[in-house]
Image (tube, rainbow, N blue to C red):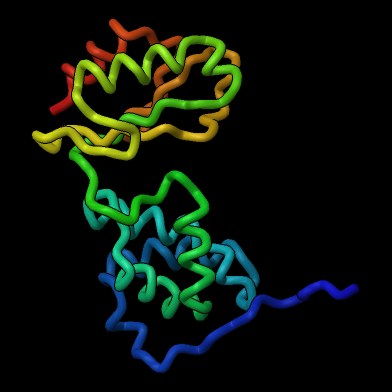
Length: 175
């Protein structure tokens, strides 16, 4: 049995000053600084989050490739992170994201009714965006607030013990 004691580094033949924007590079560098130099790849999640936010809420392959080059890691490793975690979107999204937790606690607390309500009232399936582009509706594996189920994250704000009436008020107040 063996353990990898250093990450698989890939040195990309690119001038890092041409990647992303100077502001994004500076923000990513703040996260890279939290790790030993040989482990800068550990900053991939905050880097993807920053790039996604800067790009209107979603990641393109080109942007993921730039993150890989900037962090000296294989492109595939970045794709693995971006496709594994529900917090990353690989297609354009609405102006707002409405994420309903679908864990056992939330389902027992009413998340299924909430999801059905959103589908019916706003004419959008999980993973879809409303025709007006106002919101993208997502099922989210776990939002980590089981005690106050059902939980909904709208953009980056948590809402707990949400009812169909509550979600209507929240959505009405968007924009």
